[in-house]
Length: 212
Image (cartoon, rainbow, N blue to C red; front, side):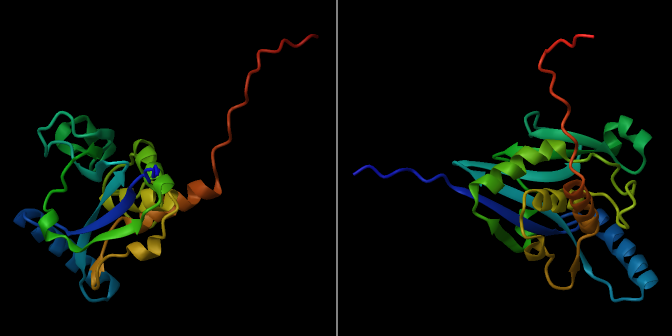
């Protein structure tokens, strides 16, 4: 009896404490969150950075937004780049981020992940869609709100946008208790706008000649 091989697929979400393994980023994140919490008259939250790991037909891909200068590997799956802080600063590698779709890649500080991994789907079509969508991510300026979503654009925007555009249940992808993911709502908002206003297909030129 011949058994048909069933393709393996899965999309896993990782929540990483902001600045895990690095004191400078963690300290700045705490200062930022303290200021925002004071302005919004609420308690301070733990800040998180999201990353995805996609399994498809025996391959494993890490999808994450990271600084352009932090990894030396030439084949790290870069599919998009954007500026950090201000658009013109993106001319320098030191003020540029990368979107990586890294086959057999690594997630830095994955040992610090909280309530992770979360299996969001085991659907082959959705896993493939996440991989296909990564290069089309709107590479807006990190830290700004250029599309007026009410939230900054950052690494969490990437993950939220990918999950929403690929039909995942984003309500099941919330940060751990007492946590917050700045940029998450920006990704969801942009994804919803794109779903509501899909691009109009270009007219097809069938080569027919018109006679006047």
